Length: 206
Image (cartoon, rainbow, N blue to C red):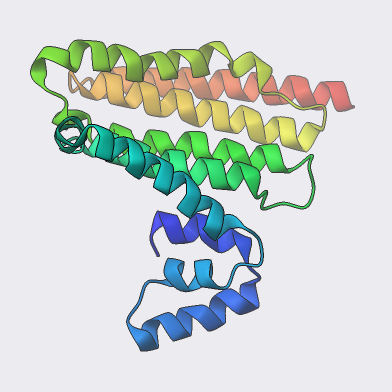
């Protein structure tokens, strides 16, 4: 299933999704298309509206947009803009306290969809593009202290997520120099810190 179908699939019941998957296979059409046709909200019409607005802008400067769409990053943003608008105006969750969590999914989605195309950026702009992408990681690291919870089980889960993130970053960086021993040392230290944090957490509960 494509990422589009993963996200749009949230908008319908599991039973209807299973039924539509069967129909899509029989008809040889995309599942996302059948889902859109069976939506009860205004998702489809809103998506068509924003897509139409973008198309109008494209017609005003056809040469520019044709050149811009040679970049897969630009294409990903075109789809993202239309989808995030419709997702925001047609909340998936009926719980307004949970809906922000759904919206956070889209931050990860646009990053995954664009960073894989970094090699398509012309060499003269790669330095600045790298600055933009890696600034996202810096922002995340600087904001890690905000990601916490009062519930001890959730906090333990968050600590493990942070440790995994740190390990992956260290593994990538040390592997650039094939420094396997350095990574093992760093990983051991991260494990030690993680255990200390988890023990402190348990002491607070006791």
